[in-house]
Structures are given as structure tokens and as C-alpha cells.
Length: 203
Image (cartoon, rainbow, N blue to C red; front, side, top):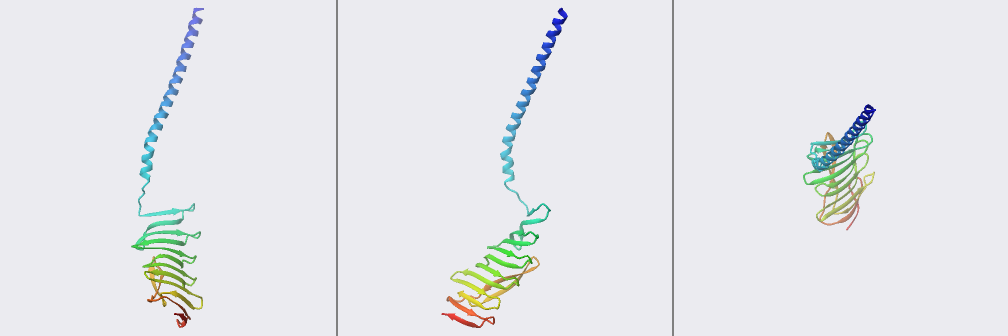
């Protein structure tokens, strides 16, 4: 009889010890989680601050196929951002070179179709599929000009200008037109044919 009583008491003590051990383990787990959370909260702002500035000579954004769809780098004498179309051809470019900044748009054949920016003066130029200038709006000091030409070469000029001038620059292995106009001291309206003969003007 005494043996059974001692065995029952021993089992009760063992169960109490097991329960205490389980409670101790649970307490240690909670303490570890709290300490780990505290360390993570202290380290997290530093990680964010460290990642706030990323430096590199060139950045590229790629799609799921691993092909470049955007690029930020230095080139053409300045910093430029290039965006590519669905065929992975250059569609738009934002360039800052010296004190001049411009945005250029290209068609599927990589021909310059429109450019907007400060090209010695604030300028908006549009080209046709052949690369011919069709419209030009520019302002420089006291001189402002709106210049348009149709497919037959007839030109209408409004403002301080007489005619267009064009230079061709080689950029990244391709020829890029740079269009400007000759300015006059007084504003006028002029119409010219394809041979630049004045058909009508005022004043």
C-alpha cells in the first residue's frame, strides 16, 4: 500500500516538473521573440537610411525576358534616360548636357520624330517619316517663331524668322538633325514655296 502511495506521489512530482519545464520553455520563447523584435525595430531605420542612396554608373530596368526597357546613365556628354518600346527599340530619351535639356521621341525605325527642350533656346520641333522638319516653335530673347511646312515644301512663318537652317550631328552612331531658323529684327508673316520664293508677306 505504501509503495503505491509513493509511486503516485513520484508521478505527481514528475508531472509538476514537466509542466514547469514546459512553462519555462514557453517563457524563454516569448522573451527571445520580444528581444528579437526589439533588435529588428532598432536596426530597421538604419537599413532604410542605408538604402536611401544607391550609386552606380548605369542603371537598367529589365522585363521578365531579361531585356532592357529603360536605362539611366551618362552619355552624349551628359546624363540621359532612355525608354524602349515593345520591340526593345529606343522610343524616348531625356538628355541633360551642360545647361541644355531635351526630350526626344523616335519612331519604330529609330528616326527622330519630335524634340522638345532647350537647344540654345526653348524649342519644339516635329519631323515626318522622312526626317523632314514639319513644324518648329522657338523663342530666344525678343525673337519668337512659329514655322510650319507641308509635304510639298510650302512654308508659313509667323514671327521673327526668314528661313530654316539645319545641321546634322552624329550621336551614338546615328545621324540626328538639329533644326533652327534665321531670325530678323521685326516680326512678320511670310509664305514661301518649295524654292523659298516669297509668295506673300505682311508687313
